[in-house]
Image (cartoon, rainbow, N blue to C red; front, top):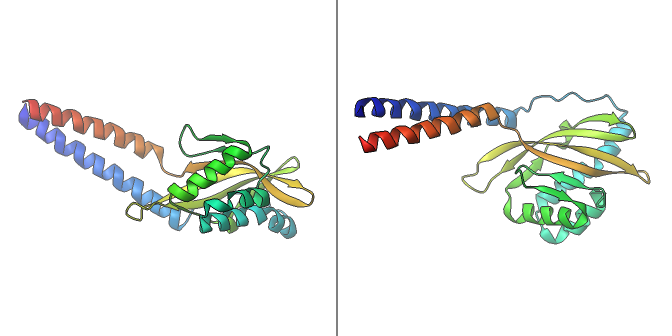
Length: 197
């Protein structure tokens, strides 16, 4: 029984390493050459004006100064209509107060977010524009980078476009993540059996 548990321990360890390598490899590919997201062909002037708040948001994320949160909101966001869904399940932010809280926490504690604004896909939704843009977060831990996809809604007010909705999505293959959890649990079970026998 000990040999069987030991053999399974090695097998599940190798499976776990393979899955973790695949997660890393796909994440790297997505960071280097993000998949093209189709959008609508918009007039160049409209596209330029619509990308303004995304470019400014990116500039504020590069500065990472929590004291600039109010300025960022005033220049890029419709605070009373703002709804942000973060990458974690409990990250649901609404309104100016919580938008400011999210920006300040991101700039203090989250990794360095960089938006690839020029690759944004834009599509009309009534009078608003839906956007999807690739991004990446460089975490401070071991300079690890995670591809992120950001979606949202842009609305026009007094001739300027503003962000009214945002959703941050970790752009990782969840099938590999779930497979890694299963392999890790199986590895733990085999380790327990190996130690008890």
